[in-house]
Image: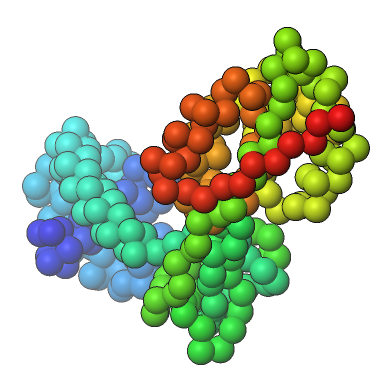
Length: 256
């Protein structure tokens, strides 16, 4: 990055940027902002005028020319691409977690998988460092410093719901089904088939319906427990997918 290797070019970029942002600033203002002497900033202005990057519009005040804008645009774009790539590299080695308790940037933290999510809390000698601050429950960026135990695949329970021709949701023991869902408060609930959707709604739960099969598979791979209410005629197709994905499951029924 040539711009960063040349002090002259760096000062040129800073001065041109300041003149674009604040048209009313003068040499003294810019010198004060950048911690330079009036004499030092004056030399930079002489070079910029001589090279046609700025013109005097009033005694002590300047305007950036088209040539100056063109130079500034090109170098800002180069700088943006450079910084974007650097940030991407840095963030690719980072993780986003949910804070457990308050965390301050720079804190040593421990992070772990639970119910399909990554959590983090402040802990001396942990396996990461906080790159941002966060309050309890907020998202926090963390940089791993050592490994951690990968998540185990989530437990899947398939609850068969009769087809509508066999009684549909009316055949389901809703109280038993409701209590089962309550017994697994951390599991997500999905429904495959209208009969299954209605049965879930009768328990007071609004399940994930659209894309339910894919949600089930992805959630289980991330370690989340899943309750799948599935209309009986669709169960075989679901089980084939779970077997292909090497996901374990059990089957239950709550039929009167």
